[in-house]
Length: 107
Length: 392
Ligand code: SF4
Ligand code: SF4
Image (cartoon, rainbow over all chains, first blue to last red; front, side, top):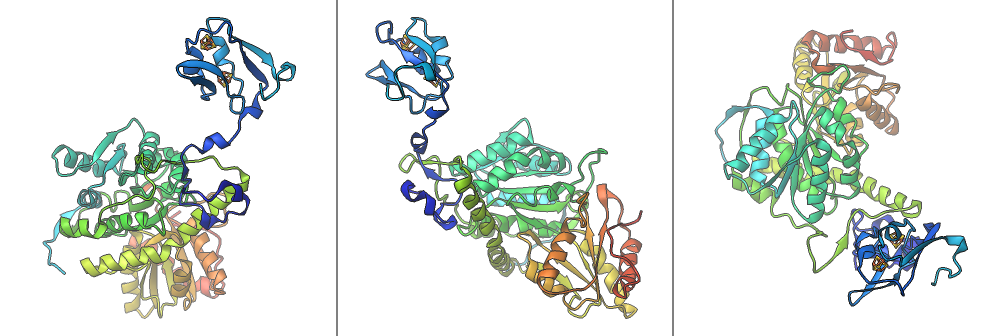
């Protein structure tokens, strides 16, 4: 652990911070960028062939995969760019307005 | 202290030799006048197998400094060199290098900025980097360019500092003129700089880290304050390594070099090669009974404010010679620092600021003599102290 605990972030002093912006690896997971989204990709499991083209194309690593199969979308980090929707050849991803999506964040 | 054979060399040769002796892991560089012969010489060392350095040929200085930052974050000891438009093209990465606390050592052969296009010496390029967080050293001679380059690695990599260091020499005047020089033995330099052990290298999969994180307003200021503290706190570290190297090589090191300052009525403050002319003029003036002196900061960032104020405290009038302008400001860069240092120390001596020698404009002895002679009028208040352009 290089950085002080994130929970105490507010009270960090300059001397608590390691020289440079050195931090523990993988901290971007804690930064939820999904709130920026105005459009939402919605997955249709029925049509999906798990070709994984969306997984390759997603610039935010937000296509979730398990055992080599597509298994959902990480809405905490998906920014709603629509690249996955554009790339899908099997009509397995729809693109809907965020405020019109019935499913909400937890979908 | 070993005796060494003296030989003639240019400042650029001496900087290249210092870097060869240090043998950094990575050099990413792009040629630009008047720095070219540093990287040209270094490329020959690489080609001839004299060093182990990975020499990265890049397509611009923007890429050169980017590659240096990446290599340094990865854990390598990194050096490079640039000048003028090249340094200007690095502007973005200069701040990144300092902010990410990458201890890169870069030589700069100080040169004018366009326009009008000009390849000759002044300090316009380096003054553009003065607020970036880099430690900045100014050499007066080729020998000093060598010594400064050697100590730069220790300063940069010290855990109390961890900042990039710019080791500068005046374009053409120092970079290309032949001077009498000596080289310390390779092993002496290698022992002095030692092995570099990076604190948090990216290329260590046993302790994975992230570098160059995003910071919002709630932490950005904390990071920036940490950089300022590291830079200001580097002053005693610069002195420590400067003195340690002086012990080895027998050439003195002072944060602020002075000549006759203790009893001088009239002082010139300047950076780099101009100090030699000022000393020459002082010797002649002292023969006439005029008490003249010179104050030359060898380190410019962090600015040795207390040392400069202490050196100036007995003067009746001071002239600050700036080889760069800060257009639109009341003072050129060096003078702004000097005036601030004197004010903070409660010293109210009149200070006259001159911009001189831009774009390699000749600085004749008579010009510097005029500066000293005019200081009498500055001292008694019959001459104004608004910024002047020498020789215009
Ligand atoms: S591109 Fe379409 S079909 Fe392929 S894995 Fe993604 S959602 Fe499924
Ligand atoms: S919309 Fe963009 S960010 Fe979201 S899953 Fe698709 S490709 Fe990734």
